[in-house]
Length: 246
Image (cartoon, rainbow, N blue to C red; front, side, top):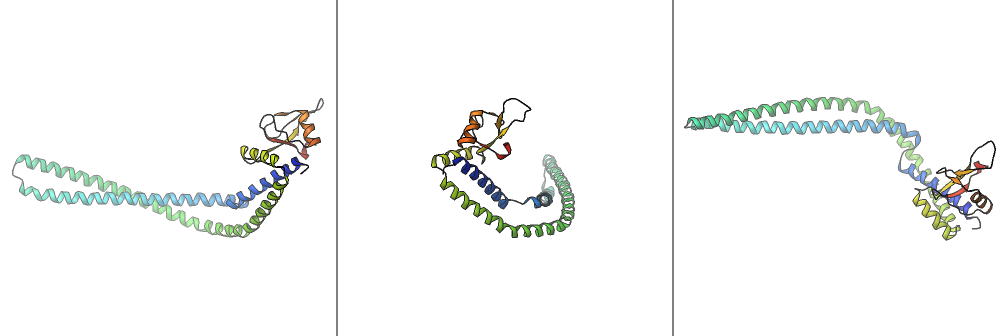
């Protein structure tokens, strides 16, 4: 191609459009973002409350199981009282019984506290789920609408891929390789427009539209007159003279 810079500028435009289309296909359109954020926040809240209910229920089960174990131990120790023969054995047994009773008390308190947490979390969960119903219906409607629009976006993305492939084949290999290295280095933006600094008088001054570094006048001449591939001296993107700079 006789005008590689023009082709590369067009290639960058097509690639940017394709990336936007692909990001849209993988995400949510702008008109759904506010609803999506509200939906996600409520859903997250429901999941947190559901987890809180489960955690409290698990703690309650563990505490109740501990109570049952302690009660079995208490029965065992109480059954041994009749078999005690010495005062020392009797004192040791009473100490074991007191320890078990304290364990029962502590576990019962833990079970009761867990039950209260479970009931509170379940009540909040029920309220949140009820409030979520209308939002869920609205979200389903909008999501269905977006799913119907997706094929058209996919079609545009496929057309862009075809255009990009065709344009790549027209750019000289060394220029294309240079562009693609910069594309990878700069997260998909290999080019930067040249912007003229507005000033009332004096010589014209230009700067890089990406990093604001000053562009040499000779570079501007080479780019405008010869369509040379010139990198910014600072950020190393390929410079091009945007129409808005006229």
